[in-house]
Amino acid sequence: MNDRYFELELMIENLARNFGVPNANCYFRLSRARRPSRNEYRRKVAEFMLEYLRVLDAFKGLDGYDDLKRFVDERLRHEVERVLDGRNRDVEKRYDYYVMNE
Image 1 (cartoon, rainbow, N blue to C red):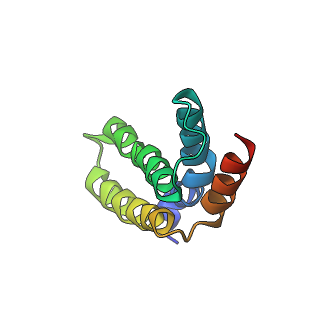
Image 2 (cartoon, rainbow, N blue to C red):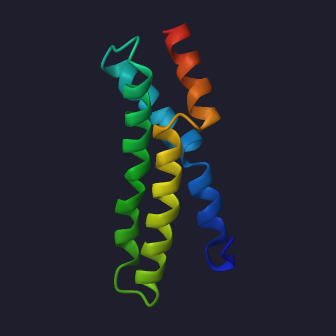
């Protein structure tokens, strides 16, 4: 793990669980979608995860921005692929819980 971006690495690893899932659940509740498909749910979680890229705009103009952007793009792409492929246990578990309880 890159020591320079240690905190960001941890945050990105947990982004689906701590940001994508809660926002996806809220989105589906507000849209009254009680039983979205598993793929629809995964795509919405990934969509919210990708919103983190907008946060990077705060770093523009700083030395090292390009390196930071490459790092985040690579790590975020990896985590989004895991979600979309159904390899993120937290997302899969929360989907089951959502459709069971809505």
